[in-house]
Amino acid sequence: MKKKISVLGCGWLGLPLAEALLKQGYQVAGSTTTPEKLGLLAAKGISPFLLDLRSPVIVPENGRFFQAEILVVAIPPGRGQENPYQDQIARLQKILLNSPVKQVLFVSSTGVYAPSSAIITEKSALDHSGAVALIAAEDYMLSAENPWKTTIVRFAGLFGPGREPGRFLAGKKDLPNPEAPVNLIHLEDCIGIISEIIKQEKWGEVFNACADEHPSRKVFYQAATRNLGLPEPAFVTSAEENKNGKWISNQKLKAALNYTFLYPDPLQAILQIPKNSTEIS
Image (cartoon, rainbow, N blue to C red; front, side, top):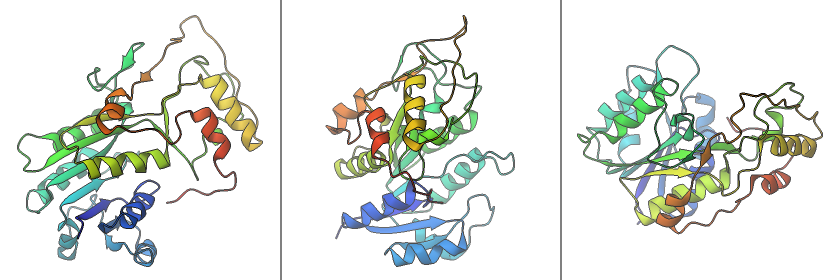
């Protein structure tokens, strides 16, 4: 029998990931902060748990959620100031110290990197002023004191069904940096990469996960809005513009996993996203 995997946070990424892992033969548990969603998880064959790390008290029945060999952490930082994200992950770390979890896959973001005109690799400088919570969360999961091994996956901008990039900037005016490269990754590639890390047991690593191609902001977002029949955004160029912007490298991930992207070019991928989809919550 395959390993038990718990997916903490069955949202836009976590739910289809849990479904995919279930199809691969794993025993899968999933958590949600929404009581109404428990029935949905159960109907899909995912063992459902109501679990909110923002609460200082974790009810005893949720202890079974952490009775797994592998934990996938797929909860994004919130925008509010209450219950800071790093406090939630610190609470999670304490829970895991008393669990049988042997491996953790922590979903992070390429937003941890400091602005740079150079190609961004896993060794590039981090943004200790703008990404404090996420960097602190990564540090908790990577602590040398932890008895489990953690792999961090820093995803670029997520897109796919229910999250169409053309809606982000539709109709906006005077947008800066028209020539800056976009760094995006499709939902199906997110699931594929996480599945391969688990299958190949690539633990104790940090990976950037971003599509191969980096079209310019202007070309990409104008095409994305046209594809949805929405007003195109308008860009301006200034003398101070950083035309290079961030360029996220995926070379370490591709080499380590021998992974070929399903959607290597975001510009081509947006033409394949259903236009009437709604975001999974």
